[in-house]
Image 1 (cartoon, rainbow, N blue to C red):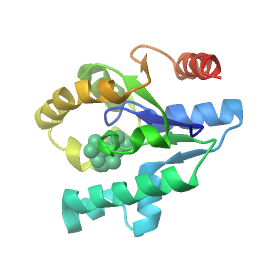
Image 2: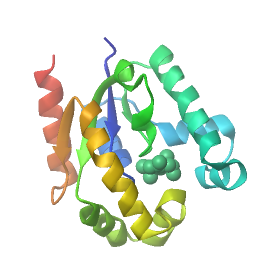
Image 3: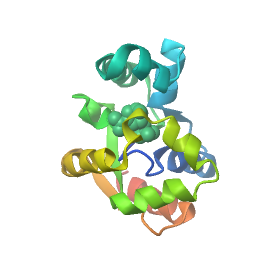
Image 4: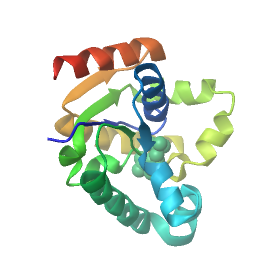
Length: 172
Ligand code: S3P
């Protein structure tokens, strides 16, 4: 069994922030599937969507998932909100869902000093109602594949990484 931890959850829930804070606190390398895709394809996610569409982006996620499974271990991996649908996700490592209500996620994005930028870089979060529909479809799918779920709403980053660490230790 692989020793990675893979963070999944909806856009804007804080997967990257949690992964980086966890990595810094506990001395573990962190990578992000969207960062890997952007460097592999040498374009921003938004540009990939604009120029080649979502199916092409999903094919890059698929290549990324294969590479993570074959080549990465002992790492905390944050993922894009649609990465959960990769068939081998449970082979990459233990899957941890960061869970929140849609309103909690939206509030979190708006509270960010760069809220506009945060929304602009997410092609599937251009329309709030459509994003909410996507959330409703995905939320039960996320829960099906998660080995562990953390409700992140109204918790500090520190509380979330401690909860994550308690669970990781319990798995050893
Ligand atoms: C997506 C989420 C994004 C990014 C892409 C598609 C999705 O990542 O992978 O825009 O399908 O939910 P974040 O979850 O970091 O926003």
